[in-house]
Length: 461
Image (cartoon, rainbow, N blue to C red; front, top):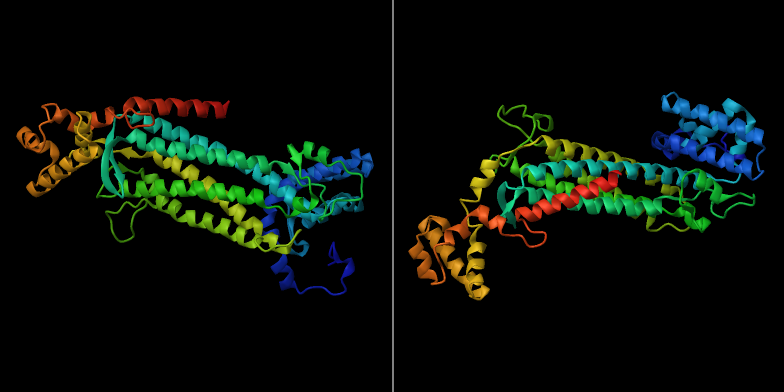
């Protein structure tokens, strides 16, 4: 078979070598983007008089036919033609004749593949933003339902202070909001056109790069042809934003796993998002949460792989850069799948309010309330901290909790204690009072939810 680039060569590679070097097994994912870029390129060539109107019309008609077949999964690709670009050029030439070979005038596979990936990521980032919005909407709804559900807040995985469960859920809402902003920021660098940069040095043909960029909906063009074909920063930004978001999802997944355990029993997952054991009939495993936690490493791996591929490459294009696509495709699939799963998992989970609320009555998470109580009455906080620490030790030795102590025991510790100390120790009251900006007090949580709704409405308008 004659290679489309084979004029300079006198010998052919063995078949297994061709297969090793071919990328069609994975870059066929870019088929629609490649056709989209080619239609714009042909249209631009005709506008500039490089192709006749008739030639461009024949080529564009052929490309649209290939697009229809691609959408129906009717195109057949071969490793003989290496990649998506040469496969489509071969199919186009078979369809419209030798004029199909004129499509590659004033461009290279180097700027062609870069254009494809810009087009692909632009749409995938937008779709990822939509999925983040959908998950955030689920979190808002669930948080609104549980503003007044009290649970233990943790530091070091030790019970720290009672908080609103709605407040806890809203923490993940704001993490996702930052994730969304990172993706939107990356979109600024994604939405620029490398088309027309050629192999590395531009072209002698009188092309109009701004026009082809406009046809493709890009905001502008790369200002340097070397940079245009060698840049993969836009993929790195996407994978970096994806890695940070997967870290957030993994942290949430870890909490879902803990909360659904027999030791916590704070939530129960819907059967759709859990599995059983082949040997232990009683098991209900949080497998989807565990998978998301595990797949986070997969996304990290894609980022580290691409960073490593690029770190020693001289300008401009190098074959190493063929390895940029599989990790990108896998990251898109993993991130979008994880968002869909998580939204469904949180929306359908049952919250065991009684277990959450009873847990904060059998611990010392209200100890800070005592210290604050004394500090509010004029005792230096450091002194108050020591007084309460001794009371906690006394309870541990006695086998009770702070609310179980008699008023006389409190008075023996400090004359500042009054009868209202038991109100201060109530976990519900402890949460209600924490109305500093961003705090867990119910009014503040409701304010967060209101702000969150406005953000989602603005994104959807």
